[in-house]
Length: 142
Length: 75
Image (cartoon, rainbow over the protein chains, first blue to last red):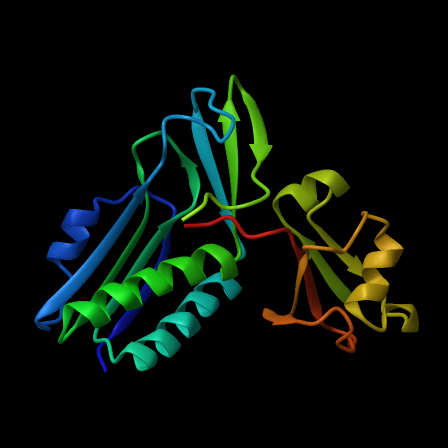
């Protein structure tokens, strides 16, 4: 089993730079990068996206999911970086990367981990439009 | 003492983020504490005790950290 690295970041990050420094030598790697949209859920131009988390529980929940899915899919190294704080459109929110010996395991494990993270890790988003903030009540559809 | 934490929309609805309640047998479960806080329906709210997700009827003990969490929207 490869290393699992989970980190919540207060400062912005460049996913490609992070990946360049990520260790692991498996044959396949699947990468997902999520960025802030330029429009809010209601279609208005988005000024900023604020992200909050429950420190401690959040990191543990994601690590637990990663351990379980790594075993289930026979995957190797897993990297999860997630931003919190105030982000502007275009900024990276999340990076999920999974290595495995085969593409199927890497891709399926990466997709499953992202979905679990979206629904079972304590993060909250607030959209800011025209200086007004609205907490989102649900995630975007797949 | 029971430490109660609220996050995101719940914190703003209540107007506070953290409260230390003197321990009382009225705080037997997260559901009982929630009902005393009068913050609306518990539907869709997740609960963590000492940073573990638990059921609303899990027994509480003095010294616990109890958090009420609105629906998660990360990723």
